[in-house]
Image 1 (cartoon, rainbow, N blue to C red):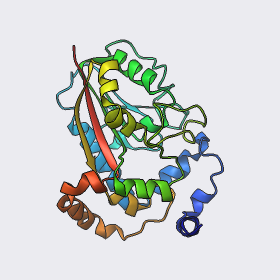
Image 2: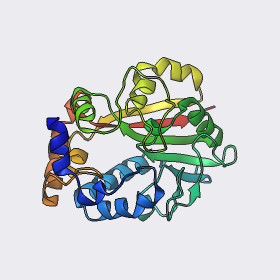
Image 3: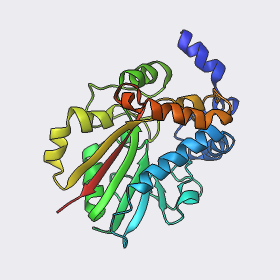
Image 4: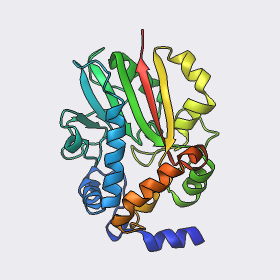
Length: 262
């Protein structure tokens, strides 16, 4: 109850007016929140730069697809990216289900996404579709919730989405945003890593990097007030860099980089 009271006090006024998270008309509210929160916007920019930097070696002739683009602004960083979502958000290039991607075989150089996998109801089908569409040498780069002592404390006490490390690779209930298990990326790439390797031998795990223990939290995310002045952003980045050896214990996110091989 104490946590709920604290969250209610920190809730952004405009976010309290959202009654259905799966309503695509929310997009303008969410975009305005990002626009007026420099701390959050800079955090997303750093995520985009991280993902794009991992794609400099991919085949150049294919498409670059961002999955679950939502209210994001990756096109302002990289205009060549094709944005997509399962909901018909204003300004998104393509609307389709991640379980039935309407793209040709071997036509995609990279799939990029932030906080998408843990909303997908059938992860096996999701990876099958991306594997089909990827060119050899193409990559899947995703930023997802990590499972560390610090992140688990935050996600299980201060976040509305379930965090269930004992779960499976998918779930049945909920809509595109209301349905979720934030632990699914950890389940697949840590708990069940050997199973993933056996199911998808063509998707090589290049790296998994745990990071960002404080910035997103202090930004307030999409629903809460920013907890520090924007001028503190570079200082917090410095603190995170100094504490990076402890990221396996305090990181809240992880970047997962996969490459399609023969």
